[in-house]
Image (cartoon, rainbow, N blue to C red; front, side):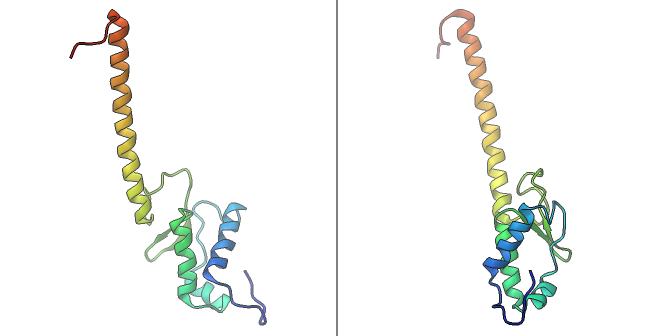
Length: 128
């Protein structure tokens, strides 16, 4: 994303859209570091908060993770959301909830299998 002197300064939404497109087109792949926010802000002629907001949008969408003191990196889609360091707290909470739901469904499936075997075994449902 380059600016000519006459071009309007990009918004956080536009910066995020450009990186979203670059990630989709594999300009940036899993594990790749995005440009440092300060340097990008200077290059684009925008405030640091504008770039941080753009990166925040990408993080909220689960496209990138931010690691304190290291930078912002493209998230590997093969790694479950919320499990890597720097994940959005919302995705971490969601991953925990999904894990609980998955375990509950597994237990219900096991119970259903046992009930079906009992019914098939003697032709009548178990007495309660």
